Length: 277
Image (cartoon, rainbow, N blue to C red; front, side, top):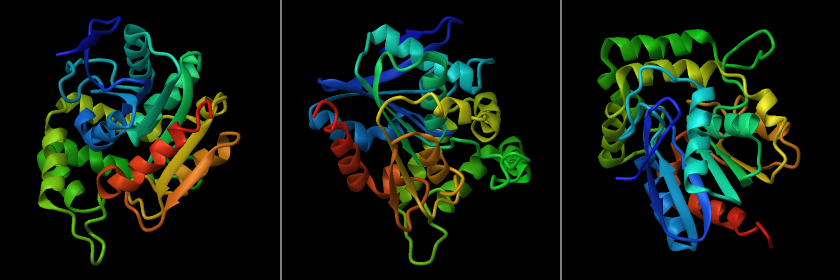
C-alpha cells in the first residue's frame, strides 16, 4: 500500500487514482479517505488524478501519539505533496479537512496549489469567543469529548443516525449503509487521535490563514448543516477570501459528500475545468 513517511516518522496512507492534473482530497473527522470515494472515482473518471489520504491517526495511517493538531496535519499534507512532487494542485477539504488545507496554505503557501475548495468546512473558527460571537459554545464540543471518552462507538452511531446526514429531519431517510459506513470509518481512527482532533477542528482559528489565499477558491456549504452551521462556516469563510465563489445547497446537511454525491461531483468538476480556461 502507498505511504509517505513524515518528518516525525508517521506513515500516512494515500490512494492515488487516475491521471491528469492533481486533485488532493482531505477528509473530515473522524473519517478517512474512503469518505471521498464517490468524488474520487468521479473525478478520476473525468480526467483528473484524484488523491485522497488518511490523516494521521485515521484509517490506515499510523496512530501517532502526538501531532493531533492542525499545524502537524498541514505539514503532513505538505509531505504528501512533496513526496508526489505535485504541481497545479486543487486542494479540496471537507469539514476538518477544510481546516487542514486552509492551514496548509497559511503555513506553506500556494507554490504547488492552483485552486482550493472548502466543503462543509470548519474555517474560519467554530468556537464561540469574545472575538467570534456567532460561534458554537464550548459546551457543545465538551459534550462531544465526553461522549468520545465514555462510549465513542455509540457517539459515532448517534452522529450518523442524527445530525451528520440530517437523518433527524422530518422526511429524511439516510440509508443504513451510509450510516454504517460512517461508523466503520470512525472506529478505524485511533481513540486519542480522534479525541484530540475535536479541539483541532473546533478551536483552531483559521482567519489569518484565509487571508493568505491568493488562488481561485470555491466554498460549498449546506444551509441546514447542524455540525458546522452555515453562518459559522461557509458563509464566513467566503467573506474572508477575496473573490471566493460561494455555492449554497438549500436544506442540505453536513455530510453532503454522501447525501449530494452527484451535485457535489458536478460542482467540483465545473470548478476544476475553469483552471486555465
